[in-house]
Image (cartoon, rainbow, N blue to C red; front, side):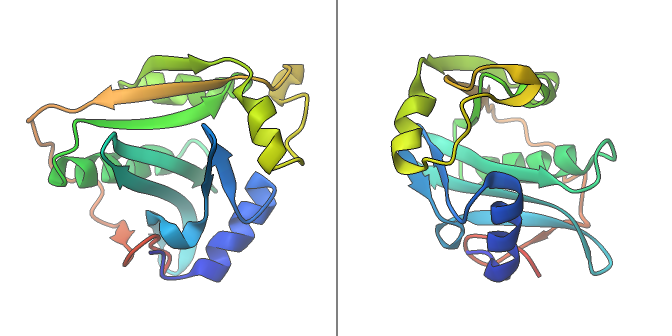
Length: 173
């Protein structure tokens, strides 16, 4: 569980339009997730949340508050390391068809397109009605895309020891 849930909830309200997320028909609350926070001293630079299941390790949300500084990469690397420690076979996530930046970001880091859920956002709107009809770049927001990184037995060294893991669902000190 995340240590600083009020901060996580505020961040999700500001950046995700509410205190919960919806993906592939599942409702996610921050108090039920694990996570990492990137810090520079006491300043929060980014947050990633994830969960473990029989399907592997799912990245639920990622927020880099300082773009193009390697924060997102460092956070994803920490989740991959945690997934390997839990012996997961894969790390996966869901994004939407309009999120071109995320599609590029994850593919550059070895993730591959695994599944297209056509019109899944329409189903998510039944749970979270404030999801817009038009997304980034003027693209109609309608589909979910699952990306995955298949894990093997090679364990990379922890490249980002300055990230702290929180207890339980999130690690926000």
